[in-house]
Image (tube, rainbow, N blue to C red; front, side, top):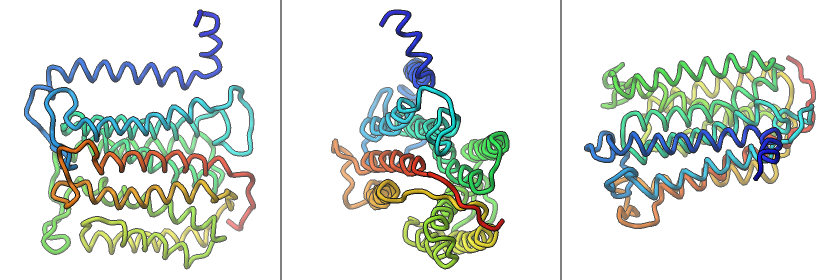
Length: 336
């Protein structure tokens, strides 16, 4: 590709090109720093996702490389951005910050999880969790911005301020996991890391379910309360009873608030993208349980790892959720 054609390509797809360059830089840094640290040092933070720990730069090869799914999904989204600026049917179809942030969130998940499974370090685990929290918070704040007609500046302020505070808290908790309440639920204590990794993570998922249920059901309070409660009870793995109770109370309260303060009704086409994405996630949640250390299906030496399948399925769900967001056509004003 000559300089003229590359310049033209750069102008058409700058987000894609910048992402490729950044990914290349991160890969080089991973190899350079890893060669003198986690590649030769004892394991700092084992992930306990079945796969046997290997020597060298990548501690869990299958679980690690499967995270490329999220990165590919993010790059596909960026590649398909329109080449021209201008207003479209909805912000996710425009050449603007919203699809870029969604794509960045997908790649952040992949990079973070790659770091966790590849290095088995505390900082890698923090990268994994902050990436997941970055991604899962985006739909919640994006929906709020659409429902209540936030400006781009307000959205960016709320999204990044909350995320940065969350990331700082999670990173601190990874190294200073204080006990907040002894015997909080039976003999289980409430620890600092639980605030972001148990409660906030689950809260974002539940609120997203409430928001989409509100749109699909026509603001039916019964559905808005029952679906996140059902998801919380059935999809939680080993969660303390008190955690489930508190989350269910929060979901009921938030659903009631959104029901009586509905804002703008969002019209999106759920079939097929939302259902495919949701189906992938539900199957992935079942698969995740099979990929833990000690699970009957766990085979540490196998090239097939259930946790890697979790990455593949949830990566697909991310793509189809993006496709779902692009189907928004117009909005009907509801009573605010």
